[in-house]
Image 1 (cartoon, helix red, strand yellow):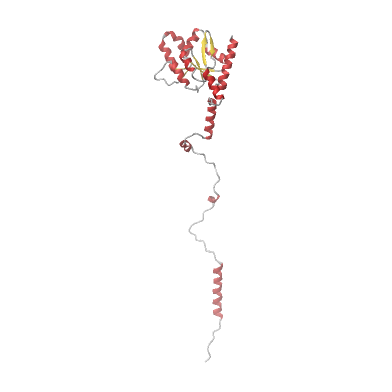
Image 2: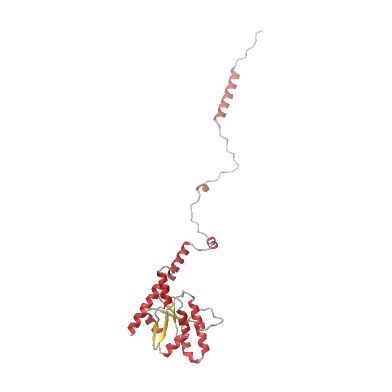
Amino acid sequence: MKIKRQKQAKKTLSFYKYNFNFREPFQILIDGTFCQAALKNKIQIKEQLPKYLMGEIQLCTTNCALKELETLGKDLYGAKLILQRFQVRKCAHFKSPVPASECLLSMLEKTNPHHYFVATQDSKVTAGLKKMPGVPLLYIIVNTIVLDKPHQTSLDHVQAVQLGELVSSAQKESIRSLKEEQGIGQKDGERRGRKRKRKQSNPNPLSCLKKKKKGVPTPPKKTEEGEKKKRSRHRRQKGELLAPVVTSAS
């Protein structure tokens, strides 16, 4: 019977790993009812759960679950001591605690983005989990821990993803990362706010030339027409000097 139960748990785990992207360490959200059942049936949660799930685990609870055990009195004092050993995850009811069943369901949101397992004996929590896809359920029967088979909501969700009607959480994460890399879907303000790094470029060669000194006028260039005019004037002056003076005879 134990081997059969282990095989079934392995099959269920592979279903959640493949279809809902569950990875180790598995996060198990526990309430007081599960701790009370474990105490009654002498089950060591920290020792037996990793063996049963064949991997590393993180046991956690909420502040509301602890507060509920405090209000219930001495009958659940042992369950409270067990629950206090686990990590306390932040919930939205820190100032005004709510029943543990309501708190646990709120931690799962609608799509269980943090990939929680839920360990409980509460019928309200169990009924709520059956409406959400991708939430593994753990409970205790007599003196054994059992991982429940995937319920119909999870099976319908997987079938819809395979038919292309829905996008799985793993596909959403990959699409989101691709959009962030390409800068798609960002607001204009965010795009403008990000300054692009300028590439280092070589200086303009024209800007490196030495500047000309101001105040020293450059001599005008002699043109060919000016030289010809000067030469013609010089020849006329020589001709006038060499011409003989003619006097009239008396």
